[in-house]
Length: 433
Image (cartoon, rainbow, N blue to C red; front, side, top):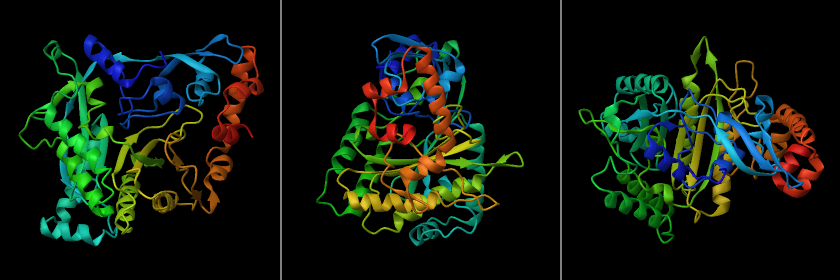
């Protein structure tokens, strides 16, 4: 059913241990209807979006009739359509046989997690940390090669940096086939830490810190980062991997996933040059985020900088559509952050992430995640809603309108009738007007 949550599905996967999804969003308390309507994604360069996995959608139309969409061309619109068909009641998603995640999350100095591109102006505070830790240029180059190896070889990739922390958290892992010996693997989160109470305590502390408005902003961010890193595992050389069903590994968290936040995410195209990914562009985007955080003394980003890598998408309105590879990069803060400071910081970051050009001088088509905080900004001097309508999705909106109208007319209703019943102000205005 469309109302099935990720956590309900996770429990089903663990109980039967035969089937799972190859990727998913990391959060647990969302529904499949919600993550598909807004075209959400997981992590891994071999992955796309959840909407790309959809094989059939059932919905109740504007006349109250149950309808189905299973045609592959129609699904390119229907699987990510923001509710503009009607009330989605069920979604059929392509699963695969259960595989095993061999997880080795680790905490490393931020400059070694995703090293900066050569010549990048590293913030002075991180340069000081490098000197204190005796990190050499050779160490950075070795870390760069290790980072690329992880990107190329591992199935799942995510990186977290909590503002003002010396270390970043790296969670990339391979998967393997399931064997008979894997029949008793534990449920999340009953592995990785000494006990669940310890993990819950760290998560509760992190949530509490987010409410401590009596702390100076930078100290609030620093304390939250300490609590977050304390709740996340750190597997060192010689220690065994954390082995789990892939359905557990995709959602692994240490408790901090429970806190409320504001978040903004952008999907940045990653080119393939001479058959190889342009990893320098990914490094630059990550370090532009770090530099932006350090440039603002009022600490408007008090939670995390996060990045995952994915592939492209065939879904018409997917931000990843048209990309060979995609860097999904995001900033978070706590809701007690002054809204004007948060907006100014988001604009600063967006100015950097949308400034990248190819060798002809053309801007890359960076696009926001639909479900995150984006609609009040500017891109290249234009209101972002105008940019989305006239530049980023101009052709995609045209294609979507054609397929959407075709889906409805074949099933006895119209766009006008459907919008009267199920319209969404922002997306309706952008797509149809």
